[in-house]
Image (cartoon, rainbow, N blue to C red; front, side, top):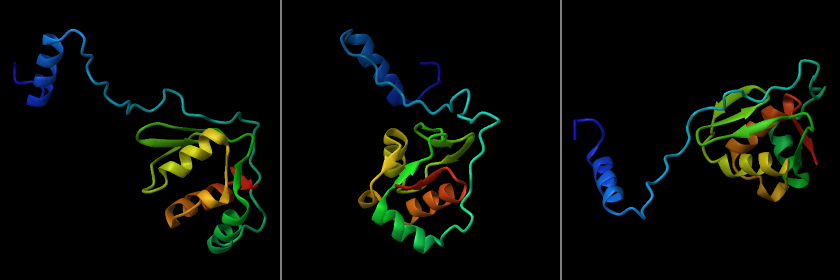
Length: 133
């Protein structure tokens, strides 16, 4: 060992070399996508004229559920969420809800819990990226 790497990495290397049937554990991908999802220049999102307060939004969202605007592009990886060209780190406690919303493009009201999740979704609503179901 030439000083590079940790002792644990060295043990993993020895274990894999001594047993050819063992595959090394893959490391999680933490590199952002080469191209973040951006809508076409002619795509414009309509913001609500009179957006509700956070409290009113939370009440309605939990009662009706939410769905993404068909033009909204949302991707995620291990460290970030990418929404229409903007990226932000995973908000604490919002990963399950945001992944479900990205994968299904809608989410039931009973799945919306936690102030952080509702704050993030309220921002997306005010930007015109999602609407009530």
